[in-house]
Amino acid sequence: MKYSIVDKIVLSSKIKRIIIFTVFRENWEPYMKKYTEVFQSHFPNLNVDYLLLDTEQIDFDSYLDADLIIIGGGNTEKYIATYVNQEFKNYIELMLKKGAKVIGFSAGALLLGEKVYISSNDNSDHQIKIKNGLGLFSQFLISVHYDSWNDKANKDSAEKLVNVPIIPLNDHSCLVLDKSGNIIDKID
Image 1 (cartoon, rainbow, N blue to C red):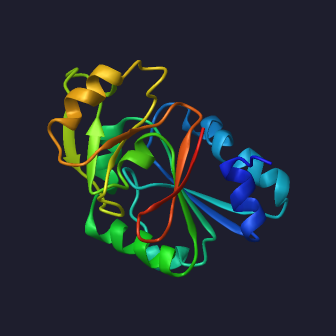
Image 2 (cartoon, rainbow, N blue to C red; image 1 turned 120 degrees about the vertical axis):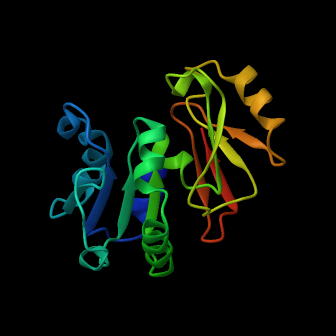
């Protein structure tokens, strides 16, 4: 039986609190259902916090009981500017050590790596960019929206700029990593 990533997470633990890190954009609230609906259907008493660190300061110590951390998607360069810093990295690493699961969607997945591949389809300059990320994995970079952006040529060009492979992820694909950043599974 093939499970979705959500099934794997739901079956692996009881989730009481989800922290969603996102950035402000018009109508951001309704968009959050994409991240929470399936979990709320499994865990009706779920406590969900939405944190927009581009508009607010938080005390990370108030969020140490999270079972699941979700880093949302959107403007990749805005996510990098907001979340790629030592304080956020320390929080994510601590939470992983405590057993929390971390999920990144699109931009949120990209920034987890040591280096971030930004497709020319993903920025207003229409340039391929390689930026620094949080460094939770370093053996590869990832390419998101590979299918819908028809991103093969960009990915191939970007691979020449880095000395590790860039793993393509289609819109409904994901990688499952262990705490050391090694790939356990790829779900398509």
